[in-house]
Structures are given as structure tokens and as C-alpha cells.
Length: 473
Image 1: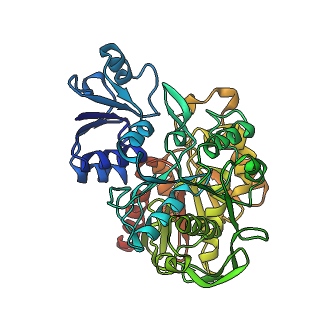
Image 2 (image 1 turned 60 degrees about the horizontal axis):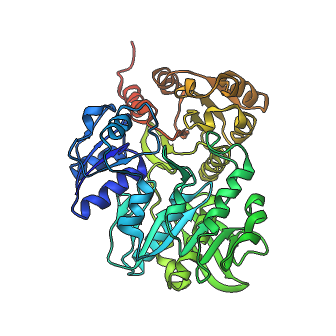
């Protein structure tokens, strides 16, 4: 079948493209913004990608056009497909029909931690010899790609609560036919779709109602909004967390080199010591969720030990992009106050006492981060940083002016909480400023869910140029 994917460079769409290519379909694609890691994955697959969007990108003889959820009425590719009455579908619907039906589906959902939890669970099943398939909204270091078509019965899929397409406003995860579902946490997010927390909760209840009675819901116990809806589950429920009362619990937690050591309890029974090879307390919770779901899939918890100890993490999640002049530059996808806070806490734990500074560069890029609704929470989320640079919001005109974030007010609020904060609008100005100011031992993290103008490589080049410049006379 000849398939065109409009919006192919999104993480889920690029992953679907890989699965479809492995199944033997002929593919073309288009997008507006194409950047790593998805651009390099698509290039390696040999899939031609056209940019920007245009009616001519869509082959008139395509048997199917997959419309990404970033496209809406008025987009030239949407309009030409409607004019031609070409067969169209969405990423979640096509994934379900082509790959999920007939498999045991392990769906990983929640406001935060989906990508890492999906990656850990996929790696556990792979390490245990189960040969799973997966689709992940990021690129796990251990697999070097965001999808896999295995021969085993299990398909692990990241379940996003964002809408499906302009013609299907349901959450993506309602398409995924879960046998086991993880809901790690529930908080207010996606202000462009959900008007309040209650509407977000209803979306997750919808997912819970799709789990068969023979299935399992694995639920984080530490967010009140999730605890509130757990009684509505129609399937058995197992909980996880670091506190009392969780079915799966980590205790005696101790920092290890770039990770953790902990003892695993299952309903109070001590299963021994485990090691997790990635930092951040939030990743402990992600690992607990993955262990519980893997157990439901038939993997003994004891057999997960070597996988957790060797798990390499996910690109764009606390990913080290380079070290120059003793400065370490990280990339992280965080674009919600909770994610920013947890990322900075994880990095702070890696800084020895008396070491360099922790510097955060934040781009308000997602719809949620560009809105005023989280402005106060964002100010508080930067407390672990020593210095904060806030850039200009990405495409601010897409948010109504009355609802739009004020970068200057955000910087003022961060400063009033005792932090060194500054608004610097453009990428090149940020790079020039930081290349002159950063010093040995500093750790800098770029917080953005987009390409951010290639800031990581620009900064590393600028740091290297300063390091190799001849001394002035």
C-alpha cells in the first residue's frame, strides 16, 4: 500500500512510519519542522520528507493519507485530501488496525513519565527474551530507535491523552485496546484541549473503562487526582510508589553513580536489592510501574534486575549532548512545571557539594507552557537552579493574548523567589551570553519540547571556540 504521512516528523508518526516500512508499505511524508532525533531516524529509513506543508506533497495516487494531530482545517494538505476524497486515517487508528489488534497491548499513560516508562518496560521484556514490539514517543538509548516490530505477543505503546486528529478529538490512547494499562500520574495539562483538571480525569477514566476485567491497571499512588478516580476502575488495580500503602514500593533508596539502589517490596514482601542506572526520583517511580506491568506480562520481578541496572535512558530526557571546557550540556523535554522541577532535582542530585552551578535555559514552546495558567507554578519549579534563562515563547500568537504567558513576569517571579533569572529572547543571544559566562564544573540543561533553533550544538560550538581561541595580547 502507498501511504503518505502528513506530520511525519512527530515522535509517534515517525515511529509509525518505521513500523509501516518494516511491514513493506511504500511511504512518503511531510512536515513543517523537522529536527533530530526523528529527522535522523527518518533519514536512516530512506523515507522522503517534504517541508513545509503543501498540497503538492500529497501524492494523488496514495492509497491512504495519515493526518497528524498538529494539522487542522486550512492546512493545504488537509484541504487537498478533503477535495480529492482520499482515504484518510489518524496515527492511533492506523496503529491499532495494522499492529495492535490480536496482540497483548501494554499501554503506558499519565501526565508525566510516559516515554521513559514505556522505554523501561520495553527493555525489560526485550531483556527477558520476549521479543516485544513497541512504539515510544522518544528514542531509547538501548534501541537507538523509537519503534520495533518483534515476533512476541506483546506490544508496548505510549498512550498519549492528547487528541487524535482534527476529525477525531478523542484522546489517542482510546484506540489502543489495553490489556494492561499504566497510569503513572494525573495532573492538569494540555490547556488547549482540556479546560480543567476534571476534564483530564475524565479522559483517563475513559482509558480505565477500556481495560477488560481480566486485565490490569497499574496506577501511581502519589497524585491526588489519580487516587480520586481509581474507584472507577473496572479491572483489578495494582499501585506503585515510594510511600506507604503502595503494592509495589521502593524502600531504602540510596543514590548510586548516576542512578539509584533500592529494595523492592511487593505487597510488603521484600524482593531484594535492585539498581536503576538513570538519575531522578521520578525515574524510580517509572521503574516501579514498568516492573509491575512486566510482572503482569509474565516476567518475574527478579528477572528485571539486570535490565534496570543496564537501562541507558532516553534521548532528550536528561540526555548529555556534550562536554566542553568542563561544562556539561544536557537536553531535556520538560515543558510542564512538574517535569521541570523533577528534572532540576535530578540534576541537582548529581552535583557534588561545592561543585559548579546548575543553569537552566527554558523555552516556553508547548501550548501549556505558553499559557498564563501555569506561570506561577513555573516560577516555583526552577528553585533547584542557580541561574535561569527564559527565552521568547515559541509562536506566541497561537495563544489568545489574554491567556498568553508573560516572559518578563515569569522572570520577575523567579527572581523574587531568590533565583538569578533573566529574559533573553533569541537563541544566538543566549548562546553568546552563556559561552562567556559558563565555567568549569557548571551543568547546563536546555528545557524545550522542540528543536529550539539548534541551541545545543550552537552552544557547544561556542564553548569550544572560546576554549581554543588564542590568548589576547
